[in-house]
Length: 264
Image 1 (cartoon, helix red, strand yellow):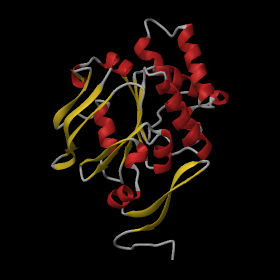
Image 2 (cartoon, rainbow, N blue to C red):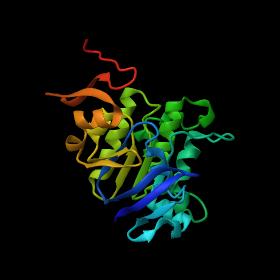
Image 3 (spheres, helix red, strand yellow):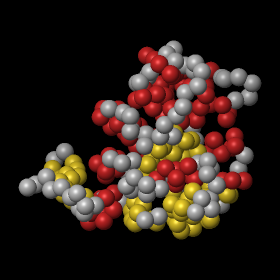
Image 4 (cartoon, one colour):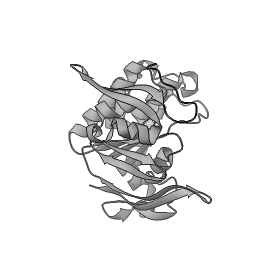
């Protein structure tokens, strides 16, 4: 299965945010979408998930334009986790997670659906909150509930917009580790918009960097996430440091107006 972005043009009114983007994503990858604020990461995510209709070009899965796929069928292909959600009413954590099985329902939830929801809550460490209302838990716990919902949706592509933004360090690492495990079998891929370059460097199979409405770079994280890219895209000076525990980015100053150099 292949998700294709072809000559994509997207924006708001006359403001073009993405222009002439093209790339394919097959199975078995964690693909991180990188770029500074306003570069179009969330806009790209929403367009892939058929929330926004392209102004030009198209998004397709195995050659079928996503705008022509029935909603229930599309939900089996693509699961979306937004950056933030609005909570209405009194949905429990359990009900929220179980709702991910709705595309597969006939008359009611099956025992298999219930077991999948329980397993996803355990994986995201929220099973002890199963009867708590979504409106009564922390932002990070809410975010983990929506990720668990996407897991039980069992889609071919998990598309997540800043999934670690409200999570503490432990749960950031665990969430990216789960995505790596899910995609390692080769029958799923994850597309993740992230700000943390260290997470992208250490947990992605591939990164796509956005700058000035276009793709600045697309490739393996170790090839793309370089000191030059960080300078060009983020206006930040950084060193790429490696030791026995891995490779990490050490930012030490900014470039341009109001520049800061932490080394002096």
